[in-house]
Length: 119
Image (cartoon, helix red, strand yellow):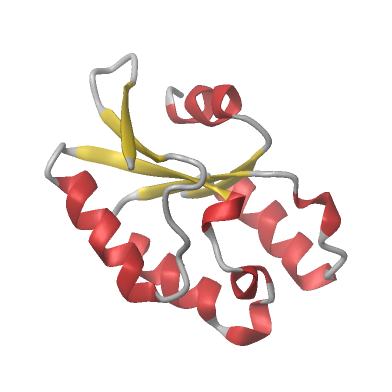
């Protein structure tokens, strides 16, 4: 299930509600991107629980495949969660670098997600 938020500049952001889906393959993200695109969304917000745990194990390649879809369709992605449980240096470096560039962001709350997207 998707909830749409309106940014200050009038753009739409699609939030995939917690518990409404579990993304286990890149093709599933494409379905969400298409649906959000119908509402002219510029970004998608996902909750950590919506992503298969393989996403956070960079060796599986799932994160790269999913994030490539967002890059191809020029959509921002914000993931809400508590990422402190992941001890992988490469994942933590990836999260830090992603947050620096702002195209993919990892945040702790919906308020933080919308605040970053409103900039």
